[in-house]
Amino acid sequence: MDFISSFAPSSLIRSVSSVGSEISRRVKTASSPPQRPFRVCNHDRTVRRGVTAGSLRELIARAMDALFLSGVISLVLEDDGTLLDREDFFETLEDGSVIMVLERGQKWVPQKNILSYTLQQEKPRNSRDIAKVTFNVYKLNPRDLFGSLNIKTTFYGLYSMSCDFQCLGPKKVLREFLKFLSVTLQGIGRVLLTASGFLQRLLEGSDHWQNNRIYKYEG
Image 1 (cartoon, rainbow, N blue to C red):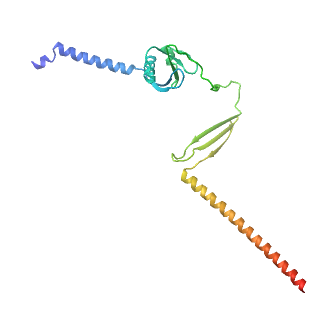
Image 2: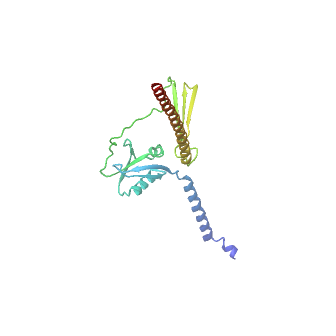
Image 3: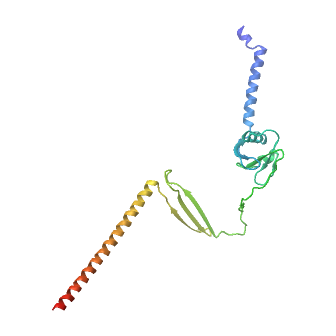
């Protein structure tokens, strides 16, 4: 009887509903958009926060939470004030884009006293590289006091030359400085000894010359 009762309609409905909810939860999780990083700021750019969102609705909600806002808000791009109100436009944004949050009555204004410039991403087809300089800053050891610098220059895409400036850790820097100081002091000591010997010979020669004059005068 227990085996037969396990196939009762109520138990079957309960099992089917649990399986259906589990499948729908998995499908919803699998179809959720990936989280992307953004930065949000208030209308006067005095407060900035980092948030992640996978859709425009999530971005609005998390921007309000990050800036402790309530009510009706609108989102615009911080650099040019373009209104962000469509999901397809949200999907075209690059990761790390800065979004300004505007409350009712607030307007976007350009940032003052900021020198802005753009670099051309693509060079003209008929152009030819004359020289290309690459700077690479790196550390040989995490404890190094300063990073090492590698400079590589390529001329006309054919000839290249590089120069590597390696900086050392604090102990090695101190050791090299002490070596340099020791060599410098040794050089100064040798110069002083040479000057002392020269002056001594000069004084001895002067005394000998005076003694000869006195001897000739008395004679």
